[in-house]
Length: 253
Image (cartoon, rainbow, N blue to C red):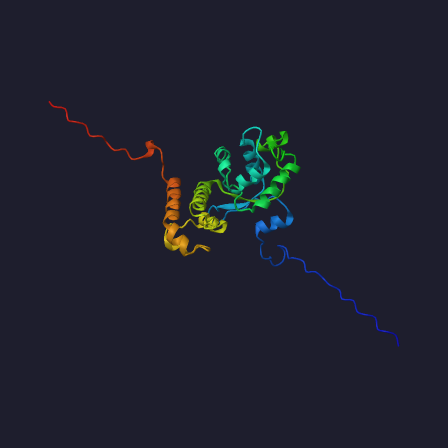
C-alpha cells in the first residue's frame, strides 16, 4: 500500500466587516497613520495636549531653527540638541535667537538627528558643520512648498513651551549646583507639562516623583506651574491692571 496523501490545510483570512455588517472597533488615528505612513494631524479630544505627533510642524520647527542661527551656521548636532531641549553654555546665544528650543523634546536625541538627516536628503538643509537652509528649504519654511519628509515626530505645543523652558532651566541649575542631572527626568517633565499639578499632593501622584523631589523641589515646581498658569489667564500689561485712583489735595475755597 502506498502512503496516504497529506491533507493540505487551507487558511482563510477573515475580512474586517464594513459599515454594511457589524462595525468593527475603531482604531486609534495615530496608530492608523503610523501603519499607513501618512501625515495625520493628531486630534485633541479632551483639551490641548502638551505634545502630539506632527509631520509638517516638525519640519517647520527644524527649518526655523536652522534659519535663526548666525552666519555661517552651526553644526547639525547643535541643531538637534537645541530642538531636543539640551542646554550648554556656548549654546545660550543660539537658544536666545529662536523659540524652538525643546520643540522636539519628547523624542530621543538619535531620532532627532535622524530626522535632520531626512531633511538633508530631501534637499531642505545642507552642511554638517555649518548647517544652512537651501533654496528649497526656504520655500518650505515660507509655505510655498509642502514638505515631502514623512517622518512623524512628537512636537511640544507652543502654548506649554514657556513652562518647559522653566523646567529645563531648573534641571540645568540643579545639575550645576548639586551635580545631579538625573533629578528631573524627561518622563517627569512630560508629566508636569501634561498634568500641571498645583499642590504637593497632586505632584506626589506623578510617576518618578520621589521623596527627594517632593521635599526639596516640590514647592519650587508648584510655584513655577502656578506662575505659568496665571500668566496665561491674567493680563500682564499695565493698561489691563486695576487702576488705583490717586487722591489729590482738596482745593481751598
